[in-house]
Length: 202
Image 1: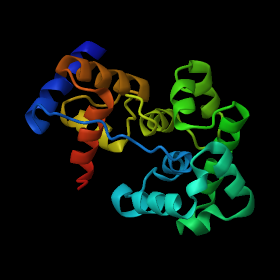
Image 2 (image 1 turned 180 degrees about the horizontal axis):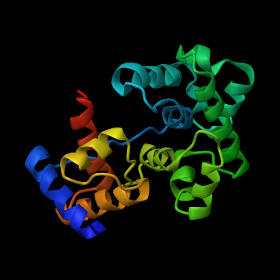
Image 3 (image 1 turned 135 degrees about the vertical axis):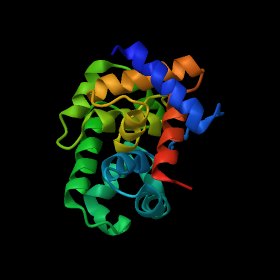
């Protein structure tokens, strides 16, 4: 089936399960250390119980890491795993590499990253970081206030309930984007509503 047909199926399922909204956008973070760590650590973790408390803890412990520059200064002298109380070497490495890449591209603040992510070449550059896939790139966008759809296992399962089985990441993202347009919802707000429903977030 086409993206349009799938979008109609998904829109009908959203109305039936979630109603007509409104579905506010999640907002994200203004602290760049929080943005980078949220994107680096969240995959396959319970967000409410495991990730969010640690992101809040990071901002309290490292208030001066609100820019990429400040975050890298902290990373050079302190242990990110220790401050977050999170023993995940691969995730720590991803955070370091994202910070280094952004710094090398002149990205320092939330607004910088918001603008920088508009360019496809910049998004492709993020994909060169080992462990960063298309979902992480889209999720970074949402964390800095862009209206994007980051397709994870929850969104994939919700689409399957609507009869949309299979399909690669880019197809499912396009289906969610089209469904948001059909329903007149903000993309990231709709994505977040589906995620909250499927993850049983409170």
